Amino acid sequence: MENNRVLIVGGMAGGASCAARVRRLSEKTEVIIFERGPDVAFASCGLPYYLGDIIKDENKLLVSSPELLQSRFNIEVRCENEVIAIDRRHREIKVRRVATGEVYSERYDALVLAPGAAPIRPALPGIDLPGIFVLRTIPDTRAMRAWIAERGCKSAVVVGAGFIGLEAAENLVHRGLKVTLIEMLDQVMSVLDVEMADFVQERLTENRVNLMLEDRVAGFEEQPRGGLIVRTASGSRVPADIVLFGAGVRPEAGLAKDAGLEIGTSGGIRVNEQMRTSDPRIWAVGDAVETCDFVSHQPILVPLAGPAQRQGRIAADVICGRQSRYRGTQGTAVCSVFGLTVANTGMTEKALLRSGLGDYEKIYLHPDSHAAYYPGATTMHIKLLFSSHDGKILGAQAVGEEGVEKRIDVIAMAMQMNATVFDLEEAELCYAPQFGSARDPINMAGMAAANVVRGDVALAKWEDLPSLDALVIDVREPLEYATDHVDDAVNIPLSRLRQSLQQLPKDQEIVICCGVGQRSYFAYRALKQHGFVVRSLTGGMKTYAHLPFELQTRDEAIAKRKTETKANVIP
Ligand code: FAD
Image 1 (spheres, helix red, strand yellow):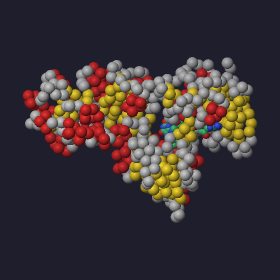
Image 2 (cartoon, helix red, strand yellow):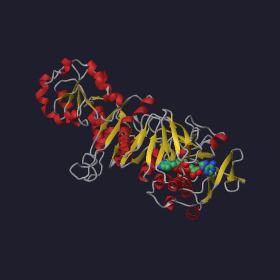
Image 3 (cartoon, helix red, strand yellow):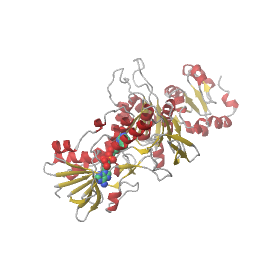
């Protein structure tokens, strides 16, 4: 079919990239973008930093304009024109001019829906009071800036500790406000597993963000002398001069639904690999669509700019007769929280458990960001999830000061190529001491994971310990052990381990613990070859320190179970 007239709803990452690609592939196609708001293709990812006054000039957020798109690409952009209905039978859309309310129709050969996702603003008592904002557009941000400046705001409540909530919290602190962050889950950043999120929570607390986890906002009240009170389900009353909702987004699927297009189970517009909806003349891309998880193949919503613009490009290819296909979404993302870089790709452990993909293993490592001897190296924390039978990479999370996003990007790309941990082990990556190590953290993660798949090490996990009738040996130096150790662990430094073999039991499992999991692996290899039944605790005490409280208090459970005699065997 000839697609001579392509109409696009929404002029941001998904819509604008689709329009520009159509033009590159076809000079003769007429392309019109309809955008409800006043701006097209602005940098929404920069909004938190405009809020925080790090970006001072609003114009810097305008990465394109209707004039530029017209003159450079011959793409017509109609800002402040909202598409209000789709007549699929006549292949027409109805458009309302925002300024006048006038409604008109336009005919299409191909229609692309890129309406994005709207911030969730729950119908709570007082939600419409002045001073409660969401952050999606430049006008939203401008209004928040004006509110803060005009009222001299001193305090803020941010609702929701996802990417946008965290970035907003940091930027409000940067502006000198005292920030309370309220999150209904038991952790910040649900794209991380709880023990990895703990590093972020620590950083927030260090920066005096008042973090309220496992609580939800119940309503808002006006204070007699100005400002608001935020009431929570637990009964707290938090005063705030300004409130920002960063409690997630919902796909703008109303237009598609009203037109009878299929909607997925997650609420996003259902599309196939070519971004086609259930109507072959209509495509949908970006935050509004339900895509397929790259690892689990289950339907998901992932509101990120990279997937949106790639999907826009694929829709354009298909509209212009090419056979491009979307591979699925990995959710690769990065965020900065008070100098801490937090990045992830693929599935988390909790998502693996939820989806019943039980056949996985995990390793933790805490390597230096670059060669330790070169000044400025910092520790990064990596969790890698992989298939225990073939080593296929399932997901990764990393937190640290430097080089974090580079490692996650490498793993993300490896996953796209269906790589295994053996490929990470072999990866040849650039190295000089200020950037990494000859054995990069990626190689180290690959080696540690490959050791598991090959059977060169058997891992123990902290959560398994209470149910194991094992002797725990801490192979760190006495000074390290004295600072912090689990209650029942016996200290035999690695350097003395071989002299202590005679005293170790052969009829009881031994679990080795150290600082980060490296010395315990060395000890494992030695003991294994001497005929002991042994396991190595992945991540060591560094991971232990960030586990949820219930797992840290497992010492008590172990203490009850263990007999004094077993613990005293070792000198
Ligand atoms: P949107 O960008 O939401 O654009 C949809 C457009 O469609 C909107 O402009 C809307 O006005 C218009 N529209 C909707 N309905 C209609 C209609 N009926 N008629 C006409 N126009 C309509 N992602 C990242 O990957 N990294 C980040 O760091 C990051 N930071 C972010 C920070 C903030 C504050 C926000 C809000 C988002 C951030 N995102 C980030 C998410 C990213 O911006 C989105 O994933 C991306 O913009 C999605 O593009 P989209 O085209 O699908 O939708």
